[in-house]
Length: 208
Image (cartoon, rainbow, N blue to C red; front, side, top):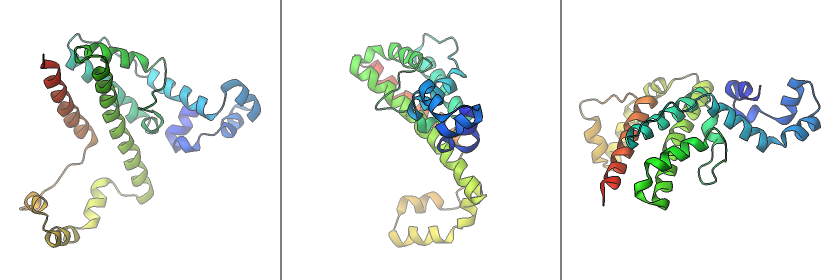
């Protein structure tokens, strides 16, 4: 029930009082059973990722990292609130997430203990960051009634051209010369950025 509310209205709409009312129990009874809002959110995060179990993993480190990143991306697309509920600096010890970390630690083991954990955190942080962008974009579209492309079209090119000329932004001037139309597709951006990150890790892993 809490997942359904968060999916429809965002995580802020989930409260102990509301969940208790939906279940037909007292708020205090729910607190005794769950332990509070923070504990509830942890259970929600665990349940959301449990919907996307890891498939059989490849021995090849890059294929393994790709599958894990894609699995997390799929979870964030399904539950737009999820990326904002996941922490990186203080990772949640959740049964559905620990196998992700364990599998990547094994893949990055040649880097050494601390660097392998840094690599895992960096990869998770990248996927999570774009996951949060999905929620922000969805909220902006709901608030304005405009898709990202609609919003860009509404802004018009003349104000941008004036800023570029006034600030002498040469790289932007070259970019827009002759016309430039960027397809801001988060799935494409996710794949592009993931490839860049894994290319960098490949260089590190190849070092003696």
